[in-house]
Image (cartoon, rainbow, N blue to C red; front, side):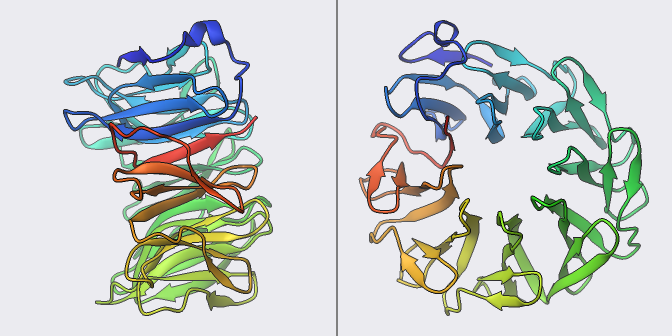
Length: 354
């Protein structure tokens, strides 16, 4: 994996970033994906080549991602603004999809022939927390440092929770696949249970399971929690590609999008607003739901896609309004191009704010 410096020495910069740091994905001429990191205030840039899967900032501004040069298997790297470290260092497995805990530990999947494991890096060493010859995947951290993941060790995927010492089978379902764990800020765990004819959403509160929704069709993507404990997801019925956005407020489930065209990709702001992708205007636009009304915040005939909020309440999305795919930022009043890379397309962004 090669790190190409575009505008400054990352080592000389140190960990004290000069401003907000934007990580965005962009393909190269060979069709591989690269990662570009831009300081929005001073426009310093650093690039990392051949990146695979997700990228994620932690609270301290360290960036985790998986990458591998052509012909090499992917490994997990951590960049702190000064030093790039290979923290998985495995020669015969594929390491992917790192996720940070609140206390700075990193979980990721390690894939080998016929097996996948979940590892945790604590800053010094690696721990195999799944330790099974089955498939272990989808790691997700709780706010207090517990790790949930799916495992096939007892047949169909069940949801397990690791508390730092022991593993507990939370779901113990013999005829369904339990996947996509997502923790709320107060420690509740939502997940999708896939049966033979339907998909269900459950929430575990630490004691019991509550059945939140049954979808005779498909749930698209992730379950996402708001800071005040509401759960959002996109779902459609069988044979119908019209996805709607649903919100559960601990009491009832409501369809908040209600349109004949698809609505997907829900994303919560820190203050409880919900952004999502909608096709209701004949093209893809970014809509905002404030709990009462819907507002089109992108308002452009070009493709707008992939909404994601920063931790300080600014909205990022991909748009082709300037002829290629760029990252735009909406601050509540103005939409601005923050990537400004006309020579390449971008397809996702994650913003770290100091």
